[in-house]
Image (cartoon, rainbow over all chains, first blue to last red; front, top):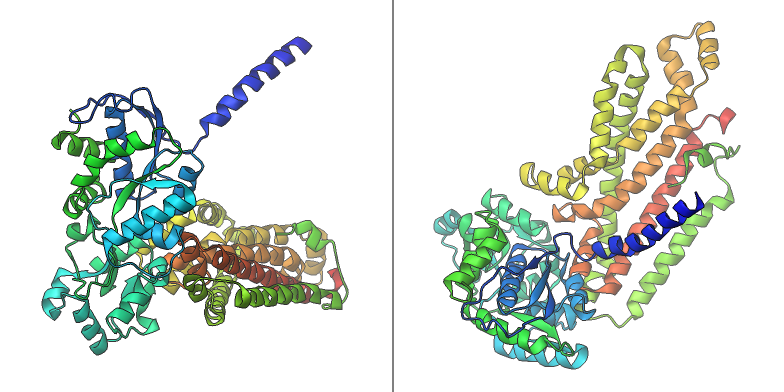
Length: 321
Length: 254
């Protein structure tokens, strides 16, 4: 009796840490090894055990998958830790070393992580500023930025644009002067960011009465725009739902919204950091705004699995075979 | 959420005693301290904008209004339904009503909000309806339990005195069930205060308008300020519920 109990206790003692370690960052952890290198150097990361993270929305999941497959092709044993809830949690995971790399945006880096409140309008200067300060303060290295511009703008439906002749943010300012009741739908975060609503209103000298501003979740903005409940809605330029729903992003004719680029980030002290960034650099270079919008659309509108979208793209581009 | 038993077994003759002022005083001190701190703290422009006194006040008012409407709605629906379940002729509705209450509470609220936002629409009423459905169960259950726990002998006596079934319900059963129903209502109130912020994504207003941007932009001071106000509201509303509970309880069982 006693003996049996001690055996089962011993078994428990062995099993418990195993069970605990199984509840790591995400439930869909898995390693991808069935990727064959194309133009990627298959020995660049040979034998390295890496973990790739991402935030929790479509574009991030896609960037995460692209990263995973690139690093796998380069010979690394990659763990999928994508789909972390929120920007801050994802960044913390990198700082703690739970993940080795993920893509983040220069605008988020500047405003959210480095706590600045003034925009830098030039994307190249912004990238350099973020890169320098993040390295100096936090020991993080920003790799080759992708040319895609993930930036805010306001969108309307194509029918509305045609009927009212609204195509630019200046047109929007004029329209709001004549129709102050038109619903302007934004996320609460956009309403609080200096590079968001407050800055836009100032730059375009808009008058938007408090009562016309609706604070919505990002997914709801698209459906409300589509249904005509919102006249103007905040969108991301690379979002696949823009073309799927027939929305027209308004042209930022005064060039107010800063252009944000995505770039892979690693820890400076990570011995695999430089090779990771080297492997990812050629991928980053191909990711233009059009490419991202197209790939995002395949995920969020056509419902294709991110893994497939990523592998098809990488194969078409010759990175993997 | 204090336990039902604790609230019932501390009968007190008077409705109000000075000790009752402890909670609101504490809340006042905490809020004053926080507002003073915010006025002194080295906040950056984003944080300062998020937690101006005007904003805190406006969003708190919105929060109170939404919560109040939810409570009225919950009481107006859950108490009559609970009473119907305890009547012999309408007891058959029990499984349906309880299923509704259980599903309302068990369904992931974030998912409900997303679905309602897309299917029903956005604004004040959709959020009020979701949160009301979410916080219905405690009042419903406690109404049933409160009425069922009334001593059968008391009801017999009332019947013997020639009281009508309606008279017994309103004159005997409901008054005796007040402490338990009110305990459920207080639980619902606190649930509602805590869940209303999630309605921010549907333009319902409330203190979520500080909390969520603060989380996304990683501005801790603003997050604490918003969270603190929600906690203070929960405390105050539960406190008010406690006073109402005592005032409505018949003196004999207070």
